[in-house]
Image 1 (tube, helix red, strand yellow):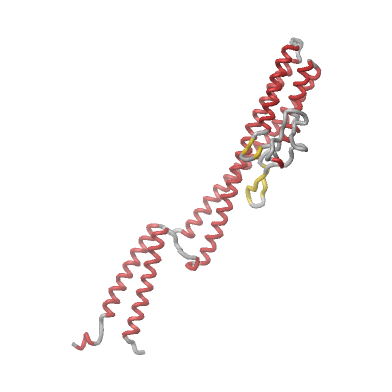
Image 2 (image 1 turned 180 degrees about the vertical axis):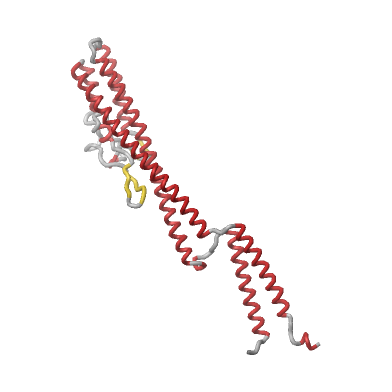
Length: 294
């Protein structure tokens, strides 16, 4: 095969372009910290990067949902604690005013206190969270409770619950509705009955309201236990996602990122190779038969 100067020049240029491409690639890796700049560099790995990135985005959304659910549940837990305190105080009032030492004057003063407690409890039931009402259930855009029987503002008792997706296909109920907390426990009804009995001086009615308050308090405590269990579930799922997110982030880094020290070492090596190729090419390209015929 006849080797001409053109062949030598073309091969030299091709080798230089190849080396230059390597320098550019190493320079890009060093400057961006990424192993690949385009999908075509390694389609299989890049596909895995995209799938992993999608999983990380899903985890991020689930973590936001869990955080919001935890905030809602924690707020309900605080409100249930306050409701329990109110019922305990109302019990004390009922016990005192059902005794033989109570008078209509003390009962009138006690009624004023119970009326204030009733308004306070309705305020708890109408607690806002974000743009809606925490215990609104299906009708979260309107206050769910009022101070007069039947104590709800909508055409029917509050129903439905706020829920959120905390993992793939897992819908989680974050809070109870006003019906479950304030109506089903008879908390509002017991306070209203106590107020009416105090106003009329009905001792038997006061004793009956006392029994209802004791039952209501027990029901509220059951809800406290339930919401505590929900918070624990959310904490467990959050911890699981925190661990998974760390693992996937490390995997994502291994797939797409390059060690900076390695990148700069590669860049220096390819620059040296390119410089050597340029030097060798310049010498070969400058050689002709005339140089040996002089």
